[in-house]
Image (cartoon, rainbow, N blue to C red; front, top):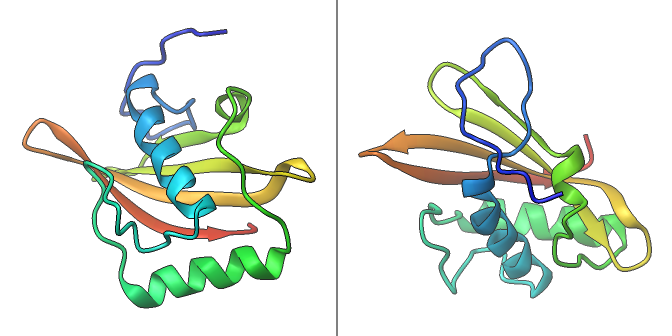
Length: 127
């Protein structure tokens, strides 16, 4: 199931995560699974994460009590985004070693700027 998903501005419905964004979102999750919550390693196109937000996300994952794993292909079947007039709200279902798909989600806003996409990590939490 490697179907290409295009980027659409649909304010009326949630849509699958565009294929073009999946690598960036996967890189964010890979950094988090290595406890790099401030993204010190850098992920191209991703805004820096303030220290207080990084600590909050780290605490949320620790409180959840499971270890994150890299996003499998399955993540894209249940994750979604929606156009919100100025940006896309993105929710990515996270996976853990013990559970597979977990209750945790990665929340990101994606903005268009100079014909590129800018990713602003909002949180990791249980909705």
